[in-house]
Image (cartoon, rainbow, N blue to C red; front, side, top):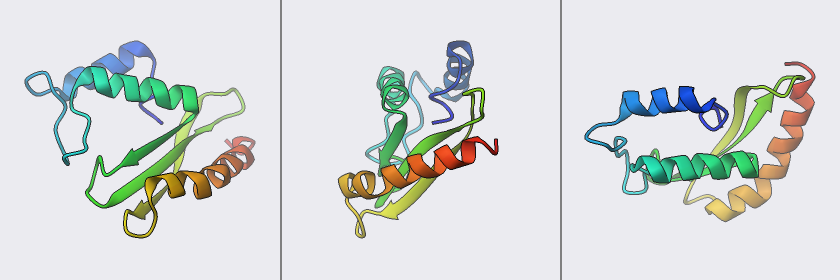
Length: 112
């Protein structure tokens, strides 16, 4: 969610600093390595206001995140929950935890 909230020029600089032969480093077979795919996923996260990464960083691990915004609406952090694929499917993680994450983020906003 932090990358999804970056201004376009900052995101471009972040991507360019990490590209190897035109691709992002592959961490697992599920990692998005093409910059166009990665940017589409970030755009989707901005639209949905959350991001679900399913085994993209580590095999057998799902991560779900929402943005934490200050009272001015700026993203200053992210709140996430991580589960093993054995314990919860990605769809169940989203269904069961996303409402709780959004609720917690709403409560924390006034403190940021």
